[in-house]
Image (cartoon, rainbow, N blue to C red; front, top):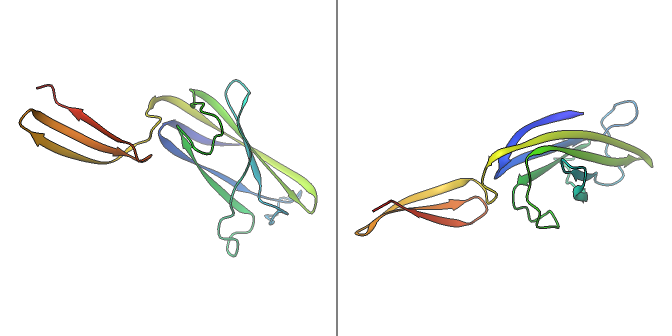
Length: 147
């Protein structure tokens, strides 16, 4: 089991898996591994999501999935991530022999489910100044100073 760290809403977490044989040798599986993400209360957040290989010619059995901790289009429900410990179960088959590994990560309080600010612009008007920001989800938000 590996620990992937602590994340806030709006951050990304890289889910990594190396598929290995029973002897621990990295080997390409029969099909892409599946991930299942379990919420802190034990219910399923995401189930049987296939994850892509990373440069198959250079890294044997390496698979990565970049998970957005927030309003995630890959999660089939509209559930938000809540604070707590999440478990990620990776499952694969090599020559019809099942393999698995488990990773965990914590979601801590704070952040924004729509993502982090990636660009901002100060816009001055006679009625006051405005801050226009774009989040990495593509959402545009604006705030005004208290004039």
